[in-house]
Length: 351
Image (cartoon, rainbow, N blue to C red; front, side):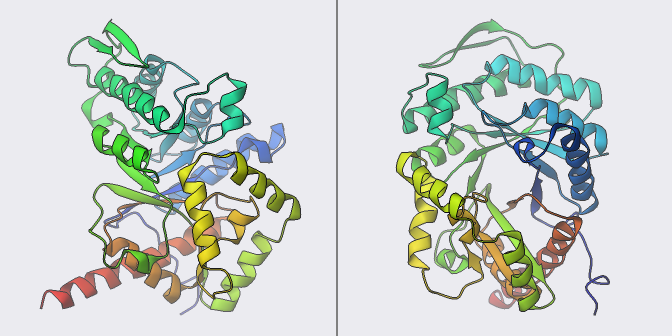
């Protein structure tokens, strides 16, 4: 069967798949807006639930990018990264309900504690890693209570305080945002659990989860390059992520100054896999080209690896930035195959 005929999407799976928006720092001003709109349409056509929009000191405001995504699509949900140091929790709730009021569209919130110490230092924020998650929990609690709209919100925390605060216009219950929190560190997982949020991890190779307790309300951040043949997939991957000496130096510097737990975890896995042939690929991470592991291989190989994550209980998948529409179309093939394999294995185990 030809690759064109095998095209499918991820709209009707038991898992949710999110793409990621291109970063404004990679484009000239006149070209970014049409590119953002284009990738949003690719994502919707591929059946994605939503699209992650990053935030850091080098990027345009994610809320403005989210508005472009909404206006360029019919149902795609922006997954907006929210960093407490940038705006008051009332502003986050107000932006959420305002988008709901104007467009009748649901969004998701990706609550980030702040992984780039240089960004935080420039804003004179010296809050330690674990305490940033305490702050994030307080911050998100206020947002949730404001959006629930049951009564004026009063919250007196260590980092965040509001008194008798109400939100207008109110948000319809069906537009209540899904909330994601990084679960790669113990403090991040604690925050996610306390908030009832989806904990997002940077995954280990699939076999690492074979004996683990099934995950609940969790997800992973992963890149995928796949094709009919293994050799074709690797050719695409190496063209997409060639060696970059400057990127390798930046990676080494980041490792020295970062207090991010997921950064350290991926680097440990990188050392463990050194010299081994694997579809689990960390070369883009090592070259500072992206910040998640990749799965590279044939449809059968990648779907088999995805099946291990699905069986481990991961129900949300945030993909890396697509370079072309084909990237998302091929993902639909392997997710459909992986879900079918997972169901077959469960049925066999139960007989």
